[in-house]
Length: 329
Image (cartoon, rainbow, N blue to C red):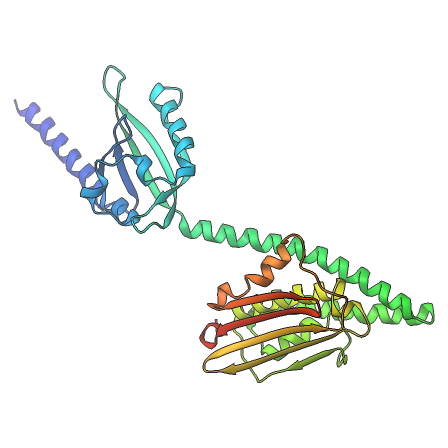
C-alpha cells in the first residue's frame, strides 16, 4: 500500500509540474483534437493571437491560420496522423484577433493511446515576427545592392559615351572619365557611411556629384538646413540615387540643355522636397514598374510621409512630404 501511495504521489507531482509548464511557458502550447479543434491552449498562445482562452478553445486551427498556410499544415498533420512521420516543423502565419498576421515557428507531435489511435496533437508555437522582419529587410538590401550595381555600370557606360562624344583627344577623354569615376566612388563611400546621418544639402550634393561635375549649372539646389538621421538619410539617399540614375539614362541629365531643380522647404513641421526636371527628352510614363521606381515611390513609407511621381512631357517631377519628426530617425 505504501508503494502504491508513493507512486501516486509521484504521478501527482509530475502532473503538477507539467501543468505549471503549460501555464507558464513563454512559448505557445496548444492541444489539438484529431479533427483539428483546439482542445486547450496556454496563456502565451492566447497573448500571441489576442484571444481569451474561452474564445480560442473550440475553434479549429484552420480558423486562426492564414488561408495560404492551411493546406500545407493540413497535409503535414494528415501524414503525422497516419504514422507516415513522427512529427513535423514548419513556419506558418496565424491570424490575430486584430486581423494582423503572426509569423510563427510551429512544431507538432502526436499523443496516441495504447491502440495507436490519435488522442491529440501537441503544438509548440514560437513567435518569429521580428526574425521575419529582419529577413525581409535583408532581402530588400541584397536586392538593392544588386540593383544599384547594375545602375552603377549603366551610369559608367552612359557617362563614358557622353565624354567620348565631346572629348578632343584621348588624354582629355581619360581625364574626364577619371573625374567621373572619382565622383562615383565618393557617392558609394557616402552610401556606406551615411548611417551616421547628414544634412539634406550634403546628401543631395554627394548623390548628384556621381552624375555631374561640381557646381554644374544644369543642377540647381536650394533649401534651408535640414538635419537627417540615419534612416531618413538612407531612405532619401536611395530615392535621389534612383532619380539621378534615370535622369542620366533617359531624362534631363542625358542631354546638354537639361536642367534639374532640387529644392525643399520646411514649414509647420513638414518637409517638402521637390525634384523637377526640365529641358530633357520628351517624357512618357514607363510601361512597367521596376524595382527602382518602387524605391522612389515608396521612399516616404519609412518617414511617415507621402510621395508623388509624375511623368509630365516637359520633365519628371517627384515630391516628398514628410513630418520633420520622422527625419531625425
